[in-house]
Image (cartoon, rainbow, N blue to C red; front, side):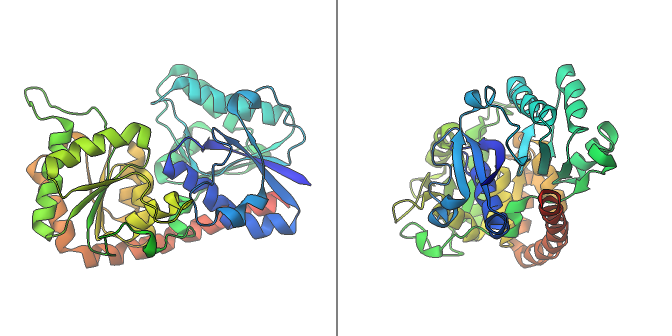
Length: 378
C-alpha cells in the first residue's frame, strides 16, 4: 500500500491542530481509498483522532503514528509525499527549535526525492535571522505551497517566489472553515441549549497590564465578559482548547465572572466524543469571544458572530477575511472593546450574513488547493 506522511502539531491535546488532521482525512478519505493510500502521522499521541465522532470511520486511513524523535532517524524515501495539512508550524514566536525541526523534515524529504506539499499553511511570525534565512530556502523546493491567508501569501511571494517546477504559491483558506467535522448538539452539557449562551475560548498572553495599570489579564477579560453577559442577558461559558495552557486561566477568569460561569475541557456526555463535544460548544453558541484561532474558524463555519482577540497576527488576518471585529489582548478591558462586543451582539444578524458570504469565497479557494494536491499525487 502506498503511504503519505502527515506532518503537524498533532496529538498534543491542542483541539485546533487535531481538527486539521481529522478534517484532512474527511476531505481526502474517499480519494485515498480509491488510490490505495494510507497516511502515517507524526503525532505525540498514539491516537490523535481520539474524541472525534468520526474516529472509527477514519482510523482505517491511518497507518503508523510516528514520534517526532523517531522521525529524524527514519528514511523518508518510501513515502509518496510529505503533507503538512494546515496550521502554522513555520513560525518561531513560540520556539525556534520547533521551526528548525519542521524545516529539517522538509529538507530531508526533498533530499530523498519525496514530494513536499504544504497545504493551507499560515507562515510566521519568523523573527530569528536563522529562521528568516532557512525557511524560504527549503520552501523553494516544495511541490505545493498553499497559504491560508493574504499575509502568508504576500510573505511567500516576496521571500520564496516560485517553487518546484516553477509553480506559484496559492491562496487557500483554513480547512476547518469547510465545516466537515460533526458536532452533534446533543453533546452539549446539561443545561446548555443551542443559541442560549455566550462562549469564550481564551488563552493567557501576558500582554497586561499597561504601565501604571494594575489590572491583571484575567480581570481585564472578566470585565469584558461580564459586560457582554449583562448586555445580552445570556450565561457565560469558557472552554479550554489547549487545556495544559488554557484551563487554569479559564478557571481564574470564571471565578471573577461569578459562580454561574461554567468552564469546560471535555464536555462529552458519551465516552470518546470529547473533541466533538467541544466543537458543539462553539457551533451552538450565540456569540463567541475567541483568542484561539480555531475557535473563530469553527464559529465562522456556522456563521456564529464572533469577536477575535488578536494575540497573534493569524487571528487579526482571519477576522479581517471573515468580516469579524477584533481587538488586542491589552485592550479587552477598555471601553472601545466593550462597545465593540455590544455592537456585535446588536448587529449579529448582519455579521452572520457577511460571514456566510465571505466563507463561500474562501471555500472556493480551499477547494482549488485541495484539488491541486490530489492532482499532484495521482
